[in-house]
Length: 389
Image 1: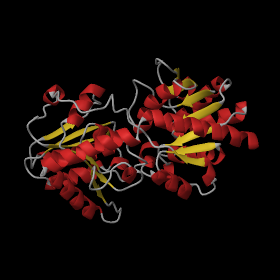
Image 2: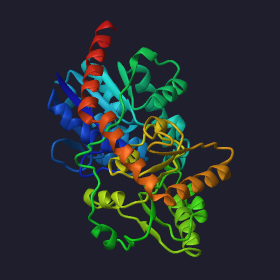
Image 3: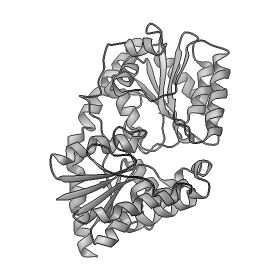
Image 4: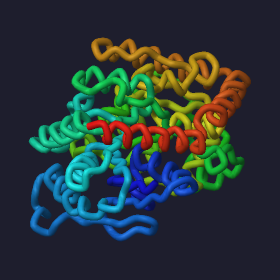
């Protein structure tokens, strides 16, 4: 079996959960089947890369994406299955399937109807991305949802999709690569006091990640608790400025606010994760949340919102705490989130036990070897579905 994996992100250009997913899934797949990877951007090892067509350099970002997709489709001719990840790659998979008469599998990492704030970033391109995603989902031979919550969202957004074609295969974590370390040099390098307890946030600056909720909740944290934000790549300059202003406001009233604006190398990020007192995930939309798995793999207690697939990862009261999110009562959410963070930071013994339980869960339930086998089973189902068309 030969699989053409289509993705916007490929190492070293990884900035989101979908990229992390592909980065770890492909090596496991390659132990079992043939895989060629097709990605965006400059040449990269282990993949065929495609630049934005020169005539589209001044076009809307969504149109540029479609241009890259069209440049790819001729290279899928030898594949038995095309597997695309996110709307950035879905149209390449859809058109490639039509052109070559082969099955298309797509993994649902997020859904455009659940991310209306993307209109801030893409303008009219959001309508284009929404069309591309919908078209691909309705035609795909199989859809992989990264959580049961994502499957429910998917069928709500696209009720025309046959539920039998939607398969739940969770995101995973490599617990050998991501595990607790004692080294603290990365903390010192970034000005973080290793002796001081801190709340950690890791994520892109996007409405989805709920960073503004965290910044407001942090006003209620005990004075001795620091806040470390590994937050980069704002969706828009306006959102970046909004976050910057809130961080400045917070810094004016308390010490220990650290904003790391550049993406940390993996070894340094693991250090910052490992030494955190509590990991904060205040997302307002999250299909699964690989970053929570990374924190759990480093034995860190997680406090997260109860949206999407997060409750399938974080076990309330066992590996952390879930805080109910209601878009109509953001102040209630922020108050309860602050209380949960304070509870963890104030009971170190309990936090250690929860962190250990989190790592045990990550190992038992989210290994990439198991996930790759489940993914190959979906490929086989897609081949049968395609034959029956």
